[in-house]
Image 1: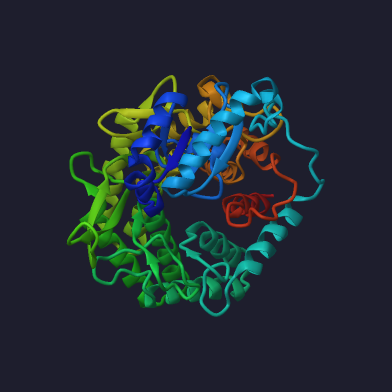
Image 2: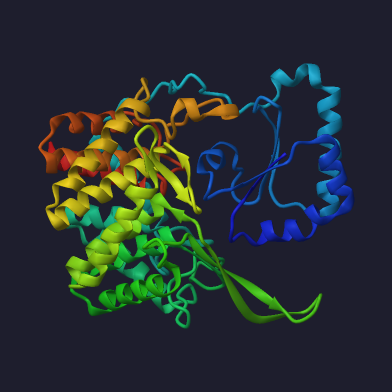
Length: 463
């Protein structure tokens, strides 16, 4: 039984308090299952393979990793019934396990036949599908639950700079305006909550993640640069203040992963509207890389020398404490570096090193960026196109590598920027390899396709 949870997830916490605290459930788990618990932020590789539309996900697997069943939140009694049913079904159907639903499809790394199309048509498709989701009244994307979606904002800002079509800039500005006016903005504590239930940014879910704060900071800085509107500079300053005061880790010089809010209980059954917070004190490499880039942008756009200093200190920590010569960047640091070799960490860190070089002209950063580029090419390249999300030798029972659209977009942007700055055509070819991975249908992946669409746009601009 694999339990996929998130540090900040209310329903995960509820299952801990109820279903996983029930004595009969504990007895069933101990008697008939090997129980595994995984945090999405610590193991994005496992989360990507088994997550069922959110957290918690409860996945039941055979010993070799085949998926028997997956469900989301369950109350105590229903969880008990599922445990019994899965165990009995597995025993009765043991001989037929090989035909059970399996997550091994695509295990050879090959892709289904792709639809032939030009990069320009793929870029138009991603643009059109994202704009089809744009809420023209409230900002953001979709008409139900709203997320920060900083990568989609970033994509539209890049489209504006390329096309000068104001529809893209106007939508990002509308989104930022509505967010700052709405309850998703924590006017008292600073920063922005991760998501809201209401399409109008009301009814916030009270958690704040580093990567989303940093992505939104970059959105505000770009909007200020493009429009000159002082409110976006003020919004950026507020986010910097939140990150410095709440998520900055003085012991490492980097940033913690997130802040979660818990409702204070006055008795066993009575809760109040008062909250207290807890911090995920892991230092995540990919999220810190996004924050470092945002701080370097803030240093240039807002004339904040302190932001540049903080960014470079965090970058030094990541390079010196979260990397090995054999395995590239690790994914997180909790006193020791953990989980090496994920594509997202290499690509985000590589882009950050290039940006640090541009900000300082220190050739050491460019050399380090080349080192990570060579690691990606040598260790993560998919023979069928694109780059795998982790090294094949690290797979274990997960069985198969994935070529994920958003991560390949980030990798392509890194390679393109490195090729330009280092005047190295080989990295241009490495970028094209990432872009060639996806020429098929992007429908249903609109927001995840945003980094890939941005990279496509950068590629076309350089042709």
